[in-house]
Image (cartoon, rainbow, N blue to C red; front, side):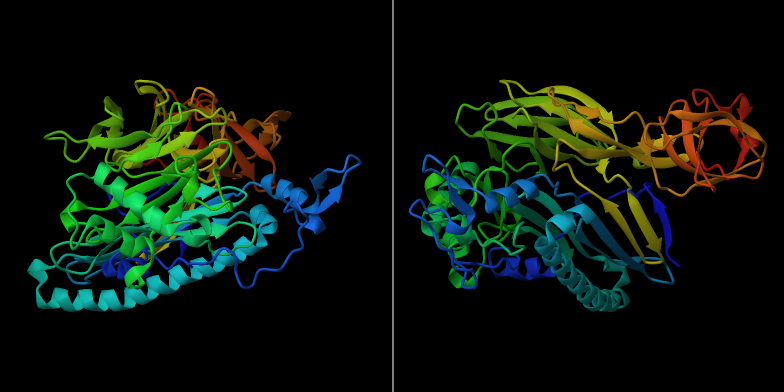
Length: 569
């Protein structure tokens, strides 16, 4: 039976992300690319349009009184789409199996689905259909991989249990860009099937939001040979100690970027340009790791077509530690080198106690405590840049450390408890399998943070936030909401206020709620009250004194007031 709950997540391992089996297979051929359709500038199935002398579609333009031409239907459609947020959540599926006799872990796997909200599905039906197909392909690959890898793992374990290490195939998706024009997904993966070490790499899939079609690199880049030459030069600049496996660096890059040797390019479209990924063994040895090269639309405009450009307004996307990121942080027109590194000192037991934020030749060390360090580059609506660093600690505790990176020296703005999530962070689990629903900070003007509540019970709940003018995460509601399903039963009559759902204001005061009534926890400020849904649909506000233990309701120990209270961790 699948059990459902919300919020309280299993602790994630370090470096758990993984790409698809297609990525891994393609990576071994030299460039680590997933199957990204390469298209010309004018797809064969594109409808022919009639243009006027200004290059404007005649059907979508009309003459004004002064003879000028103004956009009509197409502009109206784009405006309508731009007003509909591209709300996205990620559903992560996890599989695991152990030996029945000694419980040795045999196999662990995961893959992600990309889901649109109902409103976004209605606004972008072609994209919704494309994502359905994308998700099905990921699922089919994961199922096939599980069947083959689990059988191989069992065989190896039986042959040599003392030397066995669990097989892994883990696939994660990160939202690199999401606006009214482009949805760009970065796929990152790890696979281990015996041997000295596993294998990892990046890939990407880029969709046109309006048509749902995959975008090929040749639709974005006008001159692939020139791009190849520029990327090779950047590799030498950013990775000066890297020696190509065979031939020259120019030849190694060209074999990926221009499609020689039947290889495809691993790339994503970012808010300000494109990033190309070169998995281990592509340009160097396994010990050299992966190389990532960013090419900005404004930095090298001569390389790009006019089809796509920079994302306007605010944006956010995760990036990897120890990998240099190129971005014009101070608006002077020159690209700055931004890098984030976790700092683990001796006897830290795998904990990061600080982070190093490197901008060009300047290094700043700031606090960021946790098992892992996951940075996100954020640009707010004022065009200022910030780095949000997510960490996880003991007892599934999460925190965001926020740094300003606009000036000569980075500095810490503050921190806020919680992890980026959905309004309702849902999960379900059964033996050998569970899934969880979450999201990422790709829309700084509207996102949710989920954190652990310890009021009346232990549960996770989410609150809406936005990135403010100072870069700090600013709450957009006075309370947290949850759908965790914790149900309490009153042991005595209670006199409580009935409040409205939208504003939380009392609509009835001192209402008698009889003993034996079911209360479902729904909303709280995590300080003084918990709003609960009653079986008849009303919302009762339960006043809670939670500063001391035991917590109390109207001066009475909560254990004497309710049955079903759960505290953990």
